[in-house]
Image: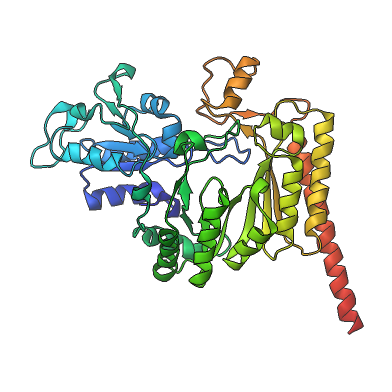
Length: 437
């Protein structure tokens, strides 16, 4: 059940639980908060979902998983005793094994075997404790949590299956929005980059595991055929790195007729003009760049492995196509000074200059740094005394100190003013042409 699609989600959830009468309830927590500088947390709503499930089904095990949960597993398990077990990181192998343990009675509630294959009695999962890739509640309080051994990443061959359930999930989004991707498709997992603030390597691993291009294109075609999806987001942390796999995916999309438009995040330092043109022929309608640093100093501080020239070169390649381009930058990062501020304003102007002839600048997005645990950024800020040792980062925590705490707004204003002037100039030119004819 997708609560995002419900106008009044909690009554709808109660109705669905009563109608379905489940033996187990799983809750996916994809994000802890929405980022984008919004000091808003999804945890209060998440807590409400847990409470609704527990009130309706007090004797049914409740399992939580997802990327958001995996960033804060113990914190969430301690905070919400309604959860009986958590699935850490990738769940394709772990969750079925957890279900099997419960099904055959080895993980029955409060350590008791389940009768007739059905979990009854509610409470703790007991003998499910120790399953690799899980946190299981075996008793009350923090001491009642058992963390299983680390599980290896899902092997590459297991990723090469077309996910036949995707169309069912994507269809409602395809009907409700024509300007945002209705579905996400992976081309690979893992990220070898080591950006200072990012949790992707911790969630997906540093080693890249590739999906077969045939599987990827098959999934895109399935979404298009069965759910009417015309707009897909490739969900890789970086889509075009390494380039060879990316090129092969594009070639297969072209061979099959590129039935959808798509977008994804591109790595600036490896994007060539030829690859940008290939992407557009394969259906790319919007390049997403997350250069994050606005000058060489901030790029180095964020450990991006990029130079400002890489960003501008990639911008030039994208601007030479017909696709829109969206840029994402972090501002007021550690070490920001007046020179960094000047460079950031200059970069906005340079990007507008590059895109103005084609009119393909979609947006320039500025964010402050969200601080996540166990990242190089969190360790740096703790050493500097900006964060207290052991500070709770579960709720939105951003790095945005004075005197440049308003820089994001200043840059947004500069971008909007430049965009408005361009639109006004375009409108005036069209009026002149109409008058001449």
